[in-house]
Image 1 (spheres, rainbow, N blue to C red):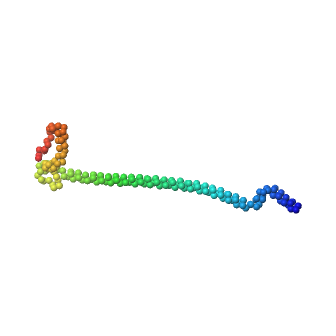
Image 2 (cartoon, rainbow, N blue to C red; image 1 turned 90 degrees about the vertical axis):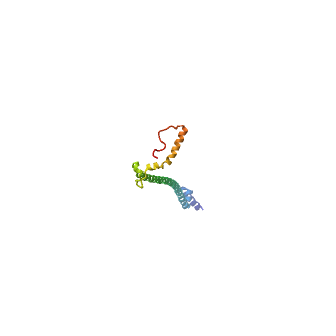
Image 3 (tube, rainbow, N blue to C red; image 1 turned 90 degrees about the horizontal axis):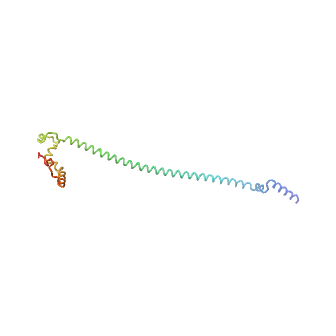
Length: 178
């Protein structure tokens, strides 16, 4: 037993000189330590990638919000443009209606200028006017315009009666020719 104790003492002395219990752990648990270190390194790497992924997700979300805001602005601007086009077309329709009315009035004016009687009174009453030409003097003599001016004469007489102004203003009430 003496040799056995000496051998054990020598082995314990060598182990103690090389680091003691750490050497034993290293020799017997070398593979699990390596796996544990690799697992910890893998976990750190995964955590780092998750942080980067979180940053990327936040970036994507912010970009999606900006895109939605831009889409909303585009829809709003399209709505404004539609309103402006509606107003433009409405003004164009009004403009076309005014142009049409102006042209109709010009045509009526030309027709009225064509139908004005410029002949002297003696020719006009002899019946030598063309069929299309109407003599204003003849219509005035027949009393065609009296219905139009009658309302104005009544209102003037009423205002004169109210104010008490019945003086002669020098204008005859009826024409001399009729």
